[in-house]
Image 1 (cartoon, rainbow, N blue to C red):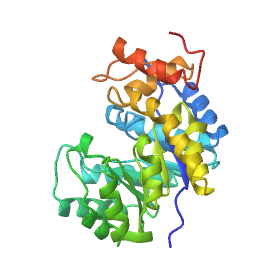
Image 2 (cartoon, one colour):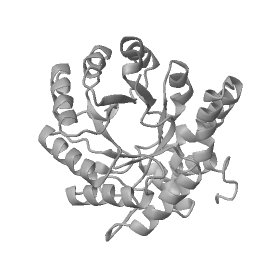
Image 3 (cartoon, rainbow, N blue to C red):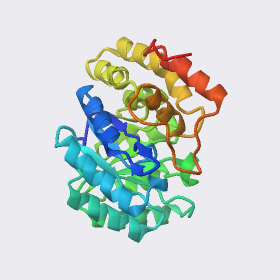
Image 4 (spheres, rainbow, N blue to C red):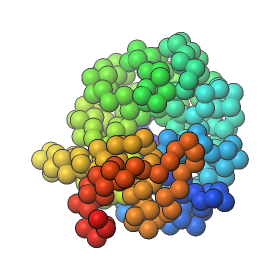
Length: 297
């Protein structure tokens, strides 16, 4: 049986930016807040980290900075996914050398490759590192879905160790678990499905909501792993409105607005992403006030 890369909650951290570039002062403050709040791992340069709008140099610098700032207090998982296999392998080698503990590799987007293409892509990426690889399936963003039988083939590659399943299908995750058993750990990729995936043997969640309410997200996994199913259910239900509001516009637009309201960073995004529409901002802040009553109207 594999030892999980982490068990519990990984925060898919935003990348604070301003007009000059990455705001590393705010980035350090946010990372320290998350670790001090009990987060089990940090994911840098994932979807929430706006990796697709960062330059290659910025991605490398953000990964190296996160490793230095975290100082081995929790595992650092570097998002190195690209839509070209050679670039993905190159960034994976860089993140490995920079000290990342594991890699999060999204399916190649836009290309819409076959299931065989996915297998060959991940074989090449896994061959470029000796670190554990988490396969990231998010078909609403990439237009390609990893099928359970493909996961079964990928599970035979020694350092492909886990899956971030963001297909929103508990059935697909269950079929993957049945086919792969303990060979692949399954992490929820949707905050509203954390408990359902834990209930079929999941190891935790890679969470957007953890940026703003890390302790509330941790309560779901803490209760579940302690055998308190009722407490886990109550914690999951308490998070539903905020989880929905954080995706009322495309991620990471809402979570950056929330973090700006809490004083962690500026509400600054890279085009083509733009700040939240007023009606959606009101919905987000209403949900956020359940956890932070002082958020203004």
